[in-house]
Image (cartoon, rainbow, N blue to C red; front, side):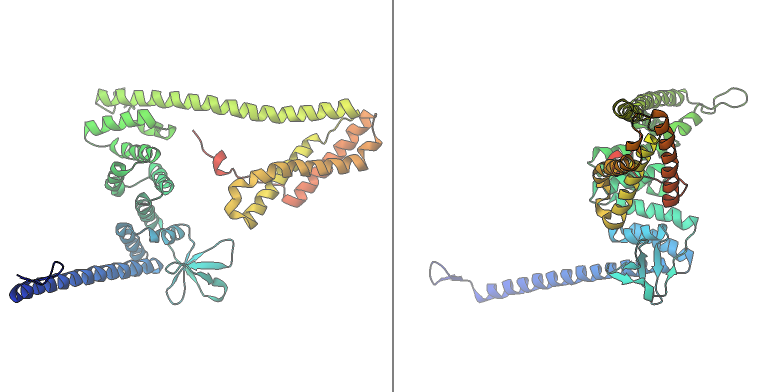
Amino acid sequence: MVNLGPLFKFSHPIANSNALKVFTRLFGLFILVLACTSSISTVEANDFESTLKELGNKSRSKIKTAVQKLGELGNPAALPALEALKAKQLAITEEGSLVILNESEDQGRDVLSGEKVDIESLTLRKSRINNVVRRHLSTAIAKLKLVSNNSAVRREAAEELLKGSSSEVVALVEVSFKKEKDDEVRELLSLVLAKKYLEDEDKNKRLESLDTIKKYGRIDFYRSLEALLEKNEQGEFLESDPAIRTGAEKAIAAIKQRQFFVNQIANLFYGLSLGSVLLLAALGLAITFGLMGVINMAHGEMLMIGAYATFVVQNLFVEYLPSFFNWYLIVAIPGSFLASAIVGIILERTVIRHLYGRPLETLLATWGISLVLIQTVRLTFGAQNVEVANPFYLSGGG
C-alpha cells in the first residue's frame, strides 16, 4: 500500500482490477433485476387491462372467466367496473372501450382512464350477464374489497358475504380474519366462517361455530340453528350428536335474549316518537282552541305540509348537493316548520281571522281547507306515498 497522505490511499493495480470487476458484475446484476421487475410489472399491467376489457365480451363464459381472473389478480382498480357490471351500468363502445354509465347524467366514465365520456354521441352496447356471472361477480367483488385499506369497505364486504357467500372465498376469509385489526370487521368475518363451518364434518369446528353464533349471532341464523333441532317422523333428532344440539339450543336462547333487548329498546323509541307526534298535534289543537276559539280540522294537514317539505328538501339535495345528502335533515327540519308556518299564516289572514269566536263555523271552514290541501298535495306529488330516506346515522337495525 502506497501512502500518499492521510486522506487518500491506493491499493495494488491487481486488487483495483478485481474490485472493478466485482463492482461491474454487481451493477449489471442490479440492472438485470430492475429490468426484470419492470418487465413483470408491465406484463401484469397489460394482463390486467386485457382482462378488464374482456368484461365487454359478448360471450358470457368469457365474461365469467374475466371476472374470476380479476378477483384472483387482487387489483382494487377493477372494483368500479365489476360493480357497474353487476348493476347493469357497464357499456361497451364500438371501439371496445368500457364505459361506466351514470344514471343521473348524460355522461359516463372511461374504466381505464377514469375520464368523463359524452355518451350521447356514442353507440353503446350494454354488457349482458346471467345468474352464473352474478355469483362470480359477488365473489370477485368480495375478494377485492376484503384486501382494501379502508375498513368501511372491508366491513361492507363482510356484510355481503354474511348474506350469502360461496365456498371459494372461505380460504380468503380465513386469511383476512387473521390479519384483520378492526373489531367490527373481525366479528363479521367470524360469523361468515361460523355460517360455513356449521355444516363441516369436523365436530370441533361446528362447536366453535355455535359458540361464535352464541356470542355474536343475529336473527338470520335462526333457520340454520333450528335445522339442527329438527326431528323425523318417528320423533328422532336428525342431528345425532347431542353436543351439537345443546350448542344450537344455547345459541338460539342467546339470540332470542339479544333480540328481546333490542326489540324493547326499539319499542321505547317508537313509542316516544309516536307519542311526540300525537303530543304536538294535541298541543296545537288545544292552543288554537284555547287562545282563538278555533276548532282547527286542518291541523293534520299542517303536519302533512311539513312532511312534504322534508321530501322536497331531500330531492333538492339529491339533485344539487349529492355529496352532502346525509345532512339534508339539518335543512329539512327548520324548512318544514317554515313551510307549515307560511301556509298557516296565509289561512289565518284570509279565512280564520273572520271566524274568531264561532267554533262550529271554524270547524266547517278548516275541514274544507283540509280537503283542499289534501287534493293540492295529490295533484302536486301524486296519490302514492313518497319515501323519505334515512341518512346513515339514522339507519341500521338490531
